Image (cartoon, rainbow over the protein chains, first blue to last red):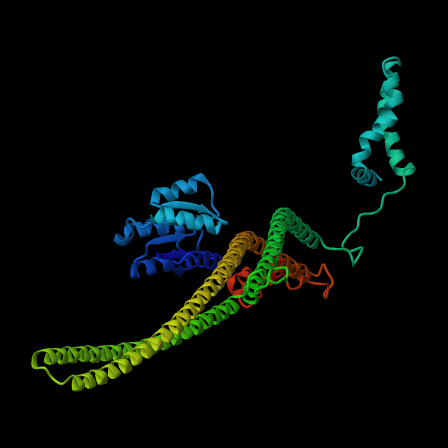
Length: 120
Length: 411
């Protein structure tokens, strides 16, 4: 069982991801944007972070960048779950330290498989 | 007259060239062939002809309106103002046209996206509904399987070949009771045999005692015989004693025979009892073996059926999981299209509303000016209401509305 931080401004999407992850036996914490996620990350440790890109306040790319600056999240896997599929955005994500990229809409099975790969 | 002629020349100025051409054309055709003095005469007569034409032939032109002549006529200042206003209206209309064109393209884009969103939403809702029905049916099927397992019936309602588990347990209990009963009987037989064995042992002890007595008699007879030969005792006395001992020996021998008969009888009945007990035990064992084999087969079959049912329930569970996954994907589509619509609302529609608001303000200002200038009648219909201020369309304005109403509110 892993502790996972899910960041998305859409409540529906957060719920879908949480439902899938909890069903697979993981402990999930939700955040509605980058700023809230950063506050959560400073308060406790997580085994994995899943974040959207387009969010109000702080976007996903900036969040990944900020998380990588924290000592506890230097080597924590960070997956980007977004509708963006452009190569330039992906390159930006890779540049700031994202571990993986999943394009929405996601298949729960694929999400769990990716999670296993990343956590192993 | 000359002033009138000059005034007429000013009035007919745009047509003077045409009139000169019409009057001078015949002269122009003949000018090269006629003598020089004719040309001179013509040169003077043409203007005269034009004057006569303007003064006496053409209809008199309308006299120019003067401020002093007509009290309802508009003053020049007002005309200038009107021209300025017209120019303003022209600019406004031009801007209206530009904004309307831009708005049209925006609205077309929004309309196209809204169509997409509606299409996605409809398909997502249909998919979710379909999957939900499927999940419900499959769950029902799972419940039917579970109930069938409990009631020991097949999915088609027929009774299963094996007995249900409670019946099998009862059968096992009955079998165990029967075996226990048989073993009890065997135990009783064994107890009776033990008692008989004790009697036989006592009989043998009695025989031993009798044999000891016989041996003692034999010893006494030997002593009597010795005394007779050594001491020369009276034969009659010895004979009496020997007879007495012989009688006693006979009685002892009879007693031994009787006891042996009893022992033989006991042995015969014990043998028969042992055979009975062995028969009972064998019968009980055979019955128990046959019944337990039968019950074991049924238990095995029963457990196979249970395993099969559980496997079916598990397979349906997997199908339900797949349906739920599809529902999750459909819900995501719904959410993504909703976000797309949200992004269209801001900034495209907000910009459109701002532009409409600006044009509305300008129109109202122009209308007020027109009314103030007295060029339009008071009470003429004014622009009313106007588009909502952009701020009202923001998130604060949306709060409290139902989700589905958002689009209606925007458009």
